[in-house]
Image 1 (cartoon, rainbow, N blue to C red):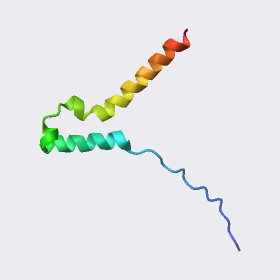
Image 2: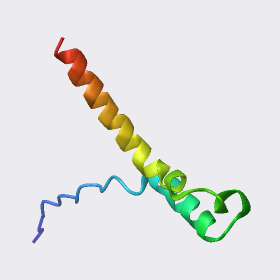
Image 3: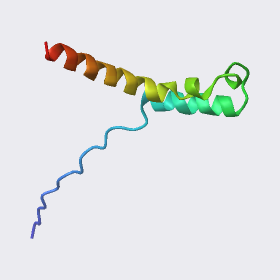
Image 4: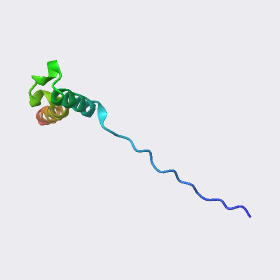
Length: 70
């Protein structure tokens, strides 16, 4: 007797940390380890890979809403 099953593979998981998240982790580790050029950086600069893309996205949405209402 031959049993066939309908095998449906699980969807591939995409995503992950991304380049911004990776840069943030690298900058944070280097700052906390007191590596010379990074130890004097402010935390604004260390966290910049996280908030700059968000700021650009907000700016694009604001500009698009201004130009769409004309």
